[in-house]
Image (cartoon, rainbow, N blue to C red; front, side, top):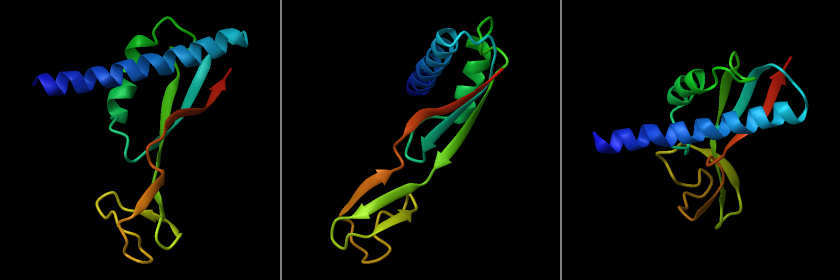
Length: 121
C-alpha cells in the first residue's frame, strides 16, 4: 500500500504544478477564467490522467481555473532506428524497428508531459 500512496502523491505534485502554471499565466495576462487546459502526454508517462483530473477538481477551487477541464492527449511512442535510420511509431510492448527488426532505437516521442494550450474567457 505504501507504493500506491507514493504514486498518487506523484500525480498530486504534477497537478499542483499544472495549476500553478495555468494560474500564473492567467494572472500575468489579467484573465479571470480558465476554461480548458490542453495537455500532451506520451504513452511512456507513468502518470494517471484520472488522478490528475480528480486532484485538479479539488485543488483548483477558488482559483481562475476552478471550472476548467483538463483534456489530455496521449502521444504515441515514436523511435528512430540507429541501424537503418528509419523513424517509426511502435507499440510500447514491441521495442523493435518495424523496418529492420533492430532493437537499437532512440525514443523521439513518448516521454512528454506538458501544457500545450489553454482556453480562457
